[in-house]
Image 1 (cartoon, rainbow, N blue to C red):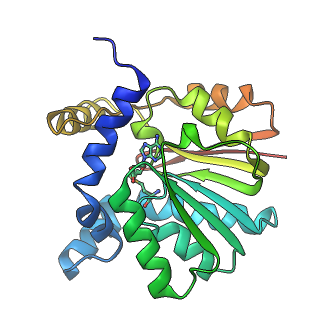
Image 2: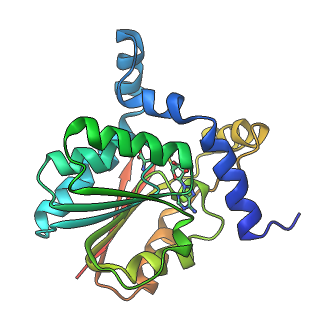
Length: 219
Ligand SMILES: C[S@@+](CC[C@H](N)C(=O)[O-])C[C@H]1O[C@@H](n2cnc3c(N)ncnc32)[C@H](O)[C@@H]1O
């Protein structure tokens, strides 16, 4: 069945609009049991966030564009780690409301700005040292134009997390999300490397993590 990009984006938006609290709770689980579960089975969420900071520090990044910022947990965390200016973009209005509120409560509203839109429609012009998308490519119909758009904003680094193909987990996850109306996508290592090399931005690195890969290209 043919799905165009706006139809696809609408499905993803509807899915995340309804799951703000559930998604956000990952970062601050209500019970010790869930905290322990997350530490073992959702380690990649923390690894992909930590890599944002590692790259920001390695490349002296003072400004960050957080694409698909969700409830702003990573954006606000980076602000608290010293990044000077951050813009978070997300297609879901409730996610952006949550992120704005989180930045206010953390006292970093002066450094974090959140905008609600499909990233592909963010007008070109602004520049950021690091342009990052973690947890986004699972929900993107075609990664190529999204990566090219990311690179058009980037001074120093383009970084993303990519869910990997596994024989059992990926089809089950695809089915679980499809039943809730949300399309998902998975990537092989070679495909990710090829996509980043096409940007002709700089050296490409692809690093395996438990649920897929973290990949970046830097000047
Ligand atoms: C799994 S969440 C990850 C949130 C955040 N990056 C994190 O790691 O906590 C994916 C987010 O991407 C957003 N998203 C999906 N497609 C998008 C698009 N085309 N433009 C902007 N945001 C998008 C969703 O609304 C959702 O909040």
